[in-house]
Length: 175
Image (spheres, helix red, strand yellow):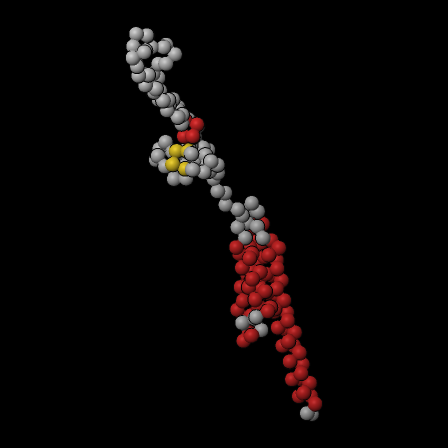
């Protein structure tokens, strides 16, 4: 059994070494506990023993208090400081919008909005990565966003060209 010297909270888990409330090192009360010594009363004299001296072997024992523990001066180390990792938010958004423009962008020409944003975010992310490589990462993600946004425009141009040629050829057949 362990006890916190600051808040006097008692913990029964033997594996705990620090108070869960305030972080103070716990004191092991199981090691401090000693059973009290028993005081034996002197024997009652009877008529036969009236003239004899009491034996020196039987003496009352006084109560002894358990030794007090010395509080430890050791304090737990502070938690490590949280270091923020490099940011790759713009590169991730560029890739997500580029992939959305290729997959879902064909519905109602939604890709006409997402593809240019993906290309612009990807280029901006690449410029940040180049200027501050220790603060920004995600170069492959930014490149994926630029390529997928550009691929949407290339496929859109091919579709428009095929429809344009179909219209032009159907007009030549009428002549």
